[in-house]
Amino acid sequence: MACFNGSSVVLLITMTLFLLTMTPTSGAVKTRQVRVTSELEGGKPLTVHCKSKDDDLGVHVLQPKGSYEFSFKPNIFITSTLFFCSFQWPGAFHWFDIYVDARDNKICSKCHWVVYEDGPCMYNWSDQQYNICHTWN
Image 1: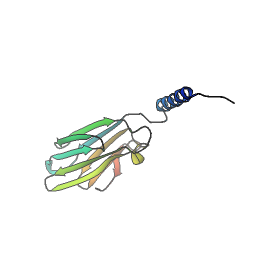
Image 2: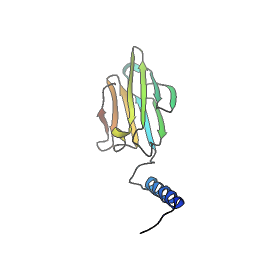
Image 3: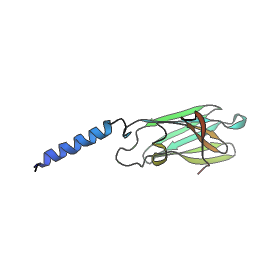
Image 4: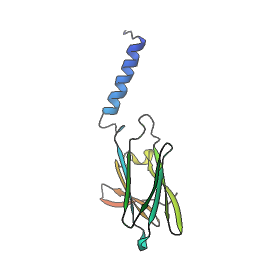
């Protein structure tokens, strides 16, 4: 039977966590990219304001066909990473959870969205089209 002292246990745990984060299939530390592109009709500007629990990414005004993107690394230990955005244009205000780790971590590392008046649609890398559509929250 092996005997470990306190420092050996700490070293073993540290090495295990390091190896887990370096495993390509774990996806634990893979950077995620979120891109939002305006597809509003009539040439309306789209105001986007994205936040997480810890980060406020600021307000961005997109012209027609304009895009805004940001990158981050999801939480390593729990799958709780969440980014939500408000979307505003003349006469409308909506919000949507633009990245939900439990929903998105297995389907995109580059999560590209287009925003229509009816709601956002995510790019489906398998079908190569924006066909994963949602209604506003």
